[in-house]
Length: 138
Image (cartoon, rainbow, N blue to C red):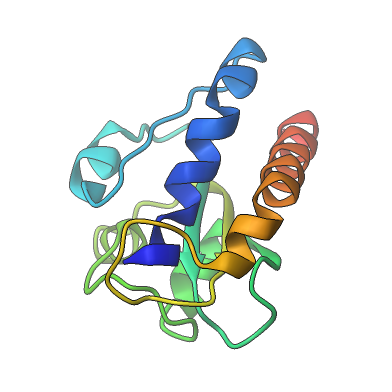
């Protein structure tokens, strides 16, 4: 669905650098149930996803994970159910953050929209910087 894949593309781009810093990267795509069952009680979790909230495409929003779980539904995600739904349903109180990349288009297609293609390198650099800052504080 075009821009809905931005989080996957970004993680694929920065995965090796994050892992070299000791950060485990799991690219779950739509297999959120697998990801959910991998989470342990003491894990600090950073979820990267795409969403449409009407702001500028390529903008990055950061939320406290527990606040995102309780406030879920205020932002339009592409999925009928998500890992956030499972966390809320099973009361899995994990510490962490949700990082959301604002998208432009959710039409059928395999490539990103032109606006996200143009901003892709900057988005990757900013997401990596944010993750590194979050991890430093943990």
